[in-house]
Length: 164
Image 1 (cartoon, rainbow, N blue to C red):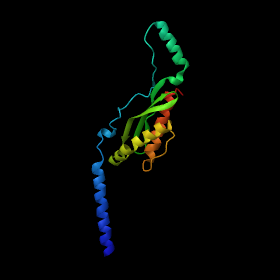
Image 2: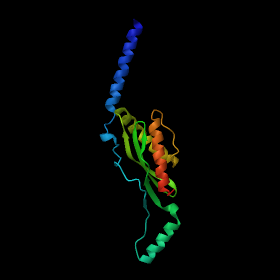
Image 3: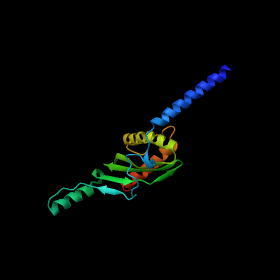
Image 4: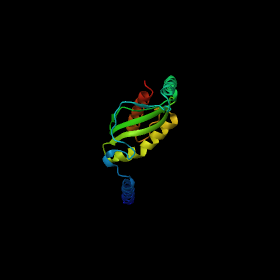
């Protein structure tokens, strides 16, 4: 009898914690993170700085910048990766051959639970990628499929930005 009462008390406590946790998770509209920009084209975009002035000066600057492509900043959107719980797509910005910025373009999990998990995991994955300067990142426990899909999209974005 005591075991039954103890089990009931523990069950009620766990349910209350779960309800409290679910209430604290921010609502995501249409399953896209607030910093996401919706869908984007997968064509890589590049940008290089050129100086103003005469046409001859611009040609010299253009020749120098094309000769040293390692200093150019290039940005590209990776493949949209369908994984078990949704879709993820990442944009990478590469400068000097190193990963400088990562932006999640699409993160559209299928269920509310997946939204809550992905909302917590995405900043961790972005931070780890920026620290590693690559898509060689560790899988986040509890979000294995999201982590793998994120890394795959990030690698394709990096490859496109580097012109590979």
